[in-house]
Length: 458
Image (tube, rainbow, N blue to C red; front, side, top):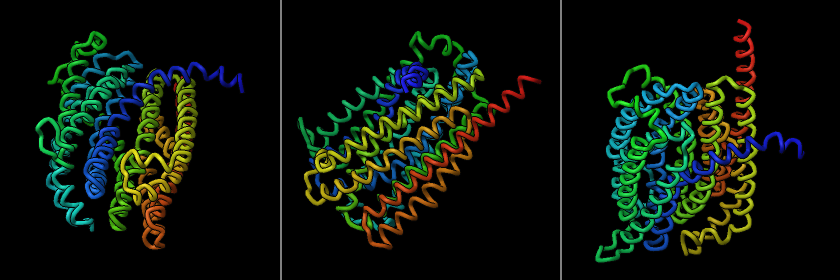
């Protein structure tokens, strides 16, 4: 055992150094919404908290489409950097910049013209819908700055520079929390805004984060060797398609998973506002650990992509195994915390006793699916690093929309097990995804070894 640890020690260290800042940066997306839930739950009440849950269920699906598209550049940058092709990295950045601006505008339109109309027909509590609409509109305005921020964040992370995005995220979240309290509660002469207040704080936060991240990448000496080739006019169809071929399937992977959880929130809303608020509390805690696991997965994509770019399959496999091991250790710790503190953690979000009781029960289930959630997101990250995105997309669709959500509906609504039945279905979906993605990795790495060996003898 000790010998095995010594063998993998350099890989653990290298992955953790890269993953640490990415974990915090990835966590920042969720912390924005977590802070919204905490502030609204304490200062506005259960109906507004249910409205936050409804909006996040709708908006998160749209947001992850954007993040997936933006993510398309990261494995490509990692692979080109592995080949020491700085000019191609700069050209990819230029194409990603325009692609993400267009995507940001289209996603805003999707929220404004689609979700704002559809929200009236989701069989939700009318009081909840009334609170949700203005919040959803304001939040949708933050899509464009979020996409531009993600452009430069994913470029920097693809090159292995992760700390600046972490710093921007930390300070952005501090600002978001301060502004949200001021706006929601009403302070310093500002009238209480309720749910709309957290929307305004998020919008301001994302505009500032975009400005800082863009300035850093374009002005820092760390990127001078790349940015000297960067021009916004360096846009061509082949590069755009290259990014889309990675980004679009990644976006769909996010949509299938996050969409299933959004669907679970809507199912919870058909049970009661209390069940929906309880779901929001538990899912926000689970989302925090998921985003930290996705940080490890992002590091896996970079390390695997870099190794794949310079055709080092031995190093690639070691980084993949290391990432799986690290996420399992992390998820066991968080699952234990959920199980031990399940009666106390919900009070972070609300003092409503009925919501706390249900949420504490859901956290026990969350403790179980943490393990599967962590391994499936790392599996996706490893496969993205090798450019394998299409089959994993099909896997996520089957896991969440053929198995997870339907079984959750069956157990939660048809069998009348309530919100816990819905969460049992989500757990089954995560288990399916985790297992199939690991088997896919084993198959792909075996094929790549054969291909690389054959190319050496040609």
